[in-house]
Image 1 (cartoon, one colour):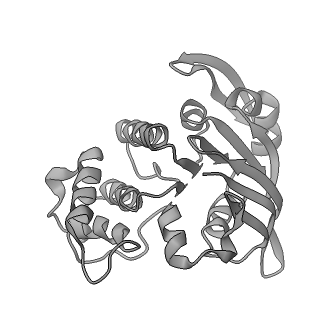
Image 2 (cartoon, helix red, strand yellow; image 1 turned 90 degrees about the horizontal axis):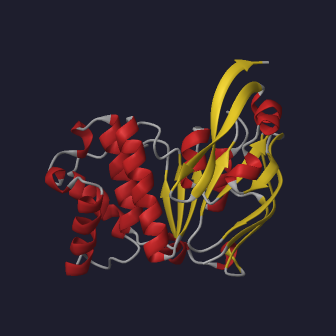
Length: 258
């Protein structure tokens, strides 16, 4: 399923946050949005998910999202915010079950429960299913939010800093799981991130934002360069190449702010 962003702009109180943003995300592809604080990453995801009303157009397989009913859109987009906005007094299982709402009529069925159990197992949280959602750590809460989005069985994942509250091991685990789902289910993933090295390792493409505009868009090797880091982040850095299973990936060693 192809997501297309065309001439997307958004302003807060006359302050331009996004300016004529253009890019696309294809099925089976992980695209990371990079950029310093205030560059528009979170706002971009909220505009795509129709939480905000931007100027410009957003298409899914050629159909404008404004012409798609909200319930149908909830079956297409799985959104993961930076943090839980409302910590509900319910079990982890029930918190993940909320992701099945686009499919549930009067009550959850056998398949809904099967999907939730499968997702919890995938996230390594099956033994925590009955624990209270409001009594777990910030990192565990973040994994529940990701599980809830996966339980929607979306065609497009929109993820805002999904690894921000996780330790190094769980960062790697979560990004590996996302990569496996994208490949196996042939879905798309658009992920806002701060960590350039994690984005480089796990992304097929990078969209680099600077002051609300697309500074560059391409594969990690072409986008994550000494010049782009200097221009966008104001940081002098060494960019080396590491080899992984997907070929050579840039690795950033920051030196100093300029």
